[in-house]
Image (cartoon, rainbow, N blue to C red):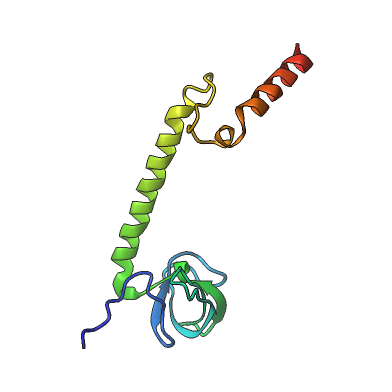
Length: 137
């Protein structure tokens, strides 16, 4: 029987060693700990579960309700860092894509242009512009 591959999103098991990925209450980033209890909610339809862990750290402190995203397996730190860099690059690309249409702010939003104006009927937007013009003019 082939072994199950472990990925970054694979839930941790009780007793598994983990590292913190950010500063937590009393546990700075990179602190080593062991999973003591797993709780949270799982989605039976195959969606992403909402998992929380209780972790006992090397100094003996116990911290509860630690999110899955705040922990990583020690042998997967490089993969976690690569994922963080990918997410940052995707966020930067999305910000650049949003900034390009914003440069032409004087033009009214076209049908599928995004933003809040794409969700409001054009007649209501025009009525609002006319009301503002009456109040200011």
